[in-house]
Image (cartoon, rainbow, N blue to C red; front, side):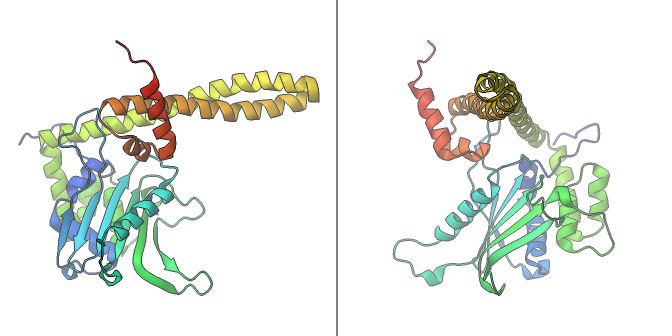
Length: 326
């Protein structure tokens, strides 16, 4: 195992790092206990379930880097670290939670075999801008009485960007969130002193950071995320440029009919909206083409982009019909 230099430390907000941390059973047990509000000693068994991942990482591959866990009582927990803003995150988590729940039954099975399913979202962006709470636990309740209908389906949303200032005697889930949100070795070391399970996570993090092969895989994943962010930024810039041009043209045309000031304002607004949409579609098309060549399916690409699967499928069909370069 090669030792790293320059005090390098992986960040758990990179999903590859988070997934690797959860391979450690003691770390997994400590975090799950915090989520469930139980003592780690009460979590008797946690078994990792298979998820969709490439056999090998490279700088041009993106996989589904979630963590699926089965508890002894049959409870299933799916955990995802998401650093890139995802506009349809609510739709996504509901889809996966329902699929996880329904996927327990085989043909002919009784409904009494269904066990609790939990989806955990660790987000490095603000999902609920209307409040300051960094942790939400969501269940199915009666909207009038607030009474819990069932606990068989549950969502846990952890917004790392909304962590409050540190106070004494924080609950265990907040301590884990602070650890996952750490940026320096000192941050992680400080949090390791608060809990023996978080201390185990810090030790595992140091081992991962000192492993040259793991470091290369981690950096490949970081690069993929940076490339995606750059793609989205350029799509917005292109859309703005096209929108202003179209808006000016439309505004002048409408201005002749409706009065220059009013027409120009309406035309700019409409053109900007259309331009942003066209700019994003063009960039989505470029990204879809790139990912198709690397073996990803349209469904996987849509999942990554947070776009409508039908839109990405239509772009994929469009690309297949275009003449190929010889």
